Image (cartoon, rainbow, N blue to C red):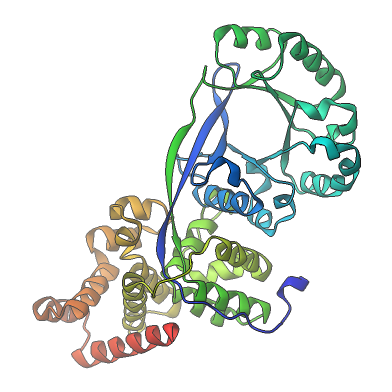
Length: 422
């Protein structure tokens, strides 16, 4: 454990609400000489241009990471993200598969002479961890000489560099670095011909593709749940206790499963239970992830009734499944229950909502078509909520459960969920 996870006085959670968080991200393709897309530069369009900060970097990286592997955002291409120097030392980068990420490092302006050496250890450390680093043409200036060997990519902005400057910079970069050159803001065929004839192999600009706006979806957990998770990790709580907290907030549950099964996280196998997710992520990464969620959480309001219903439904289904299934299988019943209202929480069709997650076929069949044992459990849980006696009796008989078993489990689920909000 790092010092950031040692026990301290517990944080005090303010009231907050589960909400669907919509982030508007623009992506612009970076292509090679054959016009094959090799990566996408991402821009946060949910903020004003003047509001580029370490916090917005964190939220952009988190959103991009959670959507890595989904074709509508980046697919399996490289992700190029602009960074502030402050965000480069942030813990959010510990959640990223470095091989997927290109960090675009800003120049230092008039402080370059004093700051280049100071920033060097952070940049070198990122490169050693496997991150790709990109710089603009200023890295070719003498003041930045220590940084030049770290450059995987150097971006040449055709809107500010004259043709004679470009020729000099391209020649110098070819002799003095191993970096691949990217001509950006390529807007005409003449510009493309000019830089490609001088050996540039990667391109970005309106001549190839304009930035395309992509609406991404995440759930914002309650701040109370995030802070409870942070306090548990700082106290090095048991896996059981941490799993319990995750199960009590639909936003936490959704975001964790979304993240850990994303291409950006880099796992080779699918994770289908919260216990698995906690054990595979480990306390250090779990702390970083929770702290990152807290950065993006919205305050104010009361606990969402939809999120509360999802939690109650998941717990009820888990308790009923435990009547006949071992605990590891009953966990899938909880997953179905807590994700059964994703379409409402994310304001999208259920098929699209669960498309954001890697769920096993029985879970998908239950959520989409109410099929199989899990589908019957979900139908029964919904009947409990709506007091539909006909459906209740039919599914109870189908599952060989008595009214007494179901009613007791329902009361236990309500009490369990209420305790979470208190």
